[in-house]
Image (cartoon, rainbow, N blue to C red):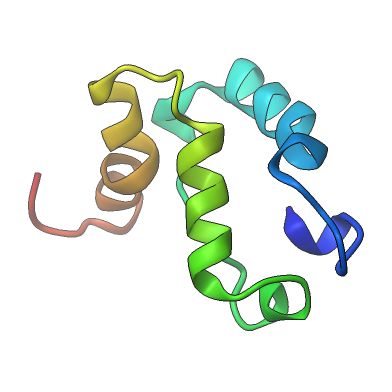
Length: 82
C-alpha cells in the first residue's frame, strides 16, 4: 500500500483506512502480509513496510495476527508449519 501513498512522506495513518477496509471486508483468514518488494522500495525500505503492517494490525488478537503474517500463506500455498 505504501506505493499508493506519497512516496516521500507517507505515514501509517495515510494507509490505515485502506488496511482497515480490507481487514473488515475479508478478515484475517483471507489476508496475508506481502511487501510488494521490490516495487515497495520506491516508497520505503522493507523494514518500514513491515513495521507499518505490524502497526496496522496491532488491534488484532494473537490468532488473527498469526493468520495475516503466516497462517493464510501456509494454507494458500500449502506450506508446512503452524
